[in-house]
Length: 89
Image (cartoon, rainbow, N blue to C red; front, side, top):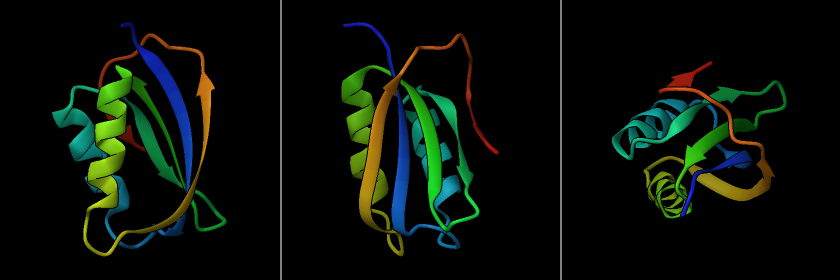
């Protein structure tokens, strides 16, 4: 199965709890690419690219982190991009 790219908007207690750093560390460990950033409204926006099973694993691991409390996630599929690495914006 090929690569996919997803855009996620995380709602809940997701800023000021190490979310971006945890997401970046976990994404890199799974060899996923993309980026994560805080938004002005208190949400966190993330675009991530890779195999679907690995993206699912990333979401599970983020949700299991202490202090992070995800109430809901808005998800959309977007076109795959040519990139390398995972960054924090």
